[in-house]
Each structure stands twice: as C-alpha cells, then as structure tokens.
Image (cartoon, rainbow, N blue to C red; front, side):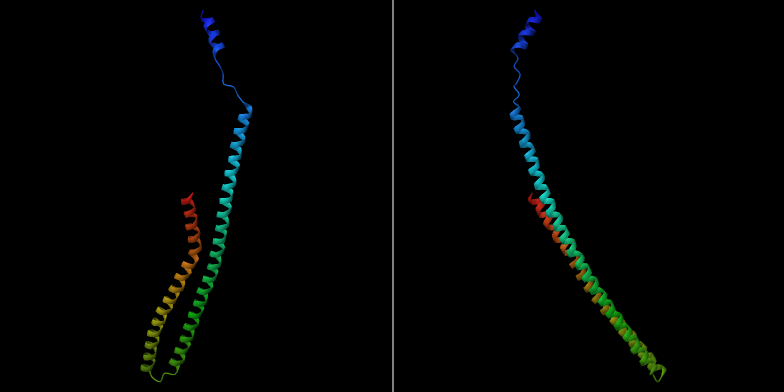
Amino acid sequence: MSRTKTAETIENVEFPSFDASKATDQIRAFAEKGVEQSKEAYAKLKTGAEDTQKALESTFETVKTASNDLSLKAIAALRANTEAGFSHLEALIGAKSLSEAVELQTAFLRKRVEMTVEQAKDFQTVASKAAEDVTKPIKTAFEKALKEIKAA
C-alpha cells in the first residue's frame, strides 16, 4: 500500500515549467545592466583620471614657477650679501684708526643681522605662497572628488 501512495503522490506533484525564453530575457537584461554599470564606472574613472592628470600638471607647473621664484630670491640675497661684504671690506681698508675700524665692524654686523632678518622674512613669504600655490590644485581636485562621492 505504501507503494501505491507513493505512485499517486508522484503523479499528483507538478513541477514548475521552465520557460527558456524568459530565462534568456532575464540573462540578457542582467548582462545589459552589467554592461551599463561598467560603462558608467569607466566614464567616472576616466573623468577622475583626467581631472587628476590636469591637477598634477598644474601642480608641477606651479612647483617649477615657485622653484624659480625661490632661486631668484636666493640669488638676489647672495648678491646683496656679497656686495655688502665687499663694501665693508673697502671701508675697513680705508679706516684711519683702530676705533674707526671697530665702529665700522659694529655697524656692519648690525646691518647684516637686520638684512638677514629681512631676507628670512622674504624667503618665508615666498615659500608660504609657493606652498599654497602648489597644494591648491590638488586640494581643489580632492574636494571635487569628495563632493562627487557624497553626491553618489
């Protein structure tokens, strides 16, 4: 009797039908969606890479300009220091007494300290501006990327 029940149960069980055309449509839709998402991701990646390249090019150009500015400032400082040294040497050679030479030396040292402080301020100003100019393109690109990430 148990065999008869099993046979009846098997005959009464219905299996869902498999429609190949629906499966194909679903696979096609899934594949198309994947391709579309890949295209979007590639477009975003390409745009990001182009923006990064532009930012780096701008940064390198700014570094070059800032480096030139600092080099010119250093050359000007060296020239001023050399001229001051030669002028002082000429004045010392023309000194008529030891007390006059000491006065010249004292005045020269005071001027040198003042000039050194002024040159240091100039270097600090140029270096600060250079650092700001160099970091600006990268900072801007980073902020733009961060906004895009937050928007997504």
